[in-house]
Image (cartoon, rainbow, N blue to C red; front, side, top):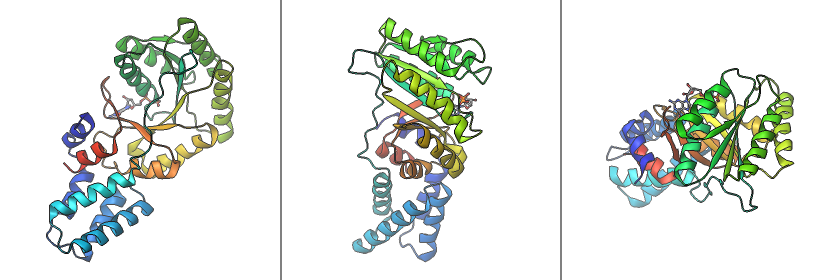
Length: 300
Ligand code: GDP
């Protein structure tokens, strides 16, 4: 198994440990089933998914008669994987078929890790043999463009930026234009996520999207969500799905978060797959999300 599993196992997630502690008995009584439910809820799995998982587990363990801790662990693992919709397509579309660069727009509330994710994703794409250009369309946060530039230097990718307070849409436009003229595979656009009002966000992001669309369609719009913000973060994230066409979620700060269950609730509530997870602040701390690896890491 790969990196995600190892990294999660090493972070010794409180979520996974809690689950394993509950199911390590020979015979589960009513209190134990309730404990299991509490553990799932506390980890932000969400009410509907938690109820379903526990019901399935109870039924299946009853069918088995006496289920050993190992059998229960495997049943729980299967239910968690199932709850993560393993059939969803999680590839990040980083190449387009129209001879122009694929446009990957990165959106989300400020502070969730957008700029960091752009940097880390650029590194992954370059590592996969793509040529990449980044556009610093977060022109509201003074340091955002500098921060992206630093990431660009770190991972060997050029950054297109505008003057301070420039119109985000014009920076995005320039980046795409430059990407086309340089014939790169992927243009990554970092955006601002000021969630002051839905209308403001719509104006801002909507305009960025429209301006880019003059050049070509956007292949991928990744929504960045901070795993430590819990259900509140999911509610905020929902606003973005009403403004732009989200194609995937990047769940950041999963390292050390006891709220890993949010992967399940965010997919259920937003209806889009978690494609990548952030596991730290370093340049190699972004991993593709794989439901089985994730669960095996949790329950390792
Ligand atoms: P933005 O405002 O959305 O662009 O957020 P930034 O990219 O500036 O990130 C905000 C903070 O979160 C920074 O201190 C990042 O280093 C940190 N951060 C981003 N992703 C991760 C992650 O996956 N794990 C951890 N531990 N920190 C992260």
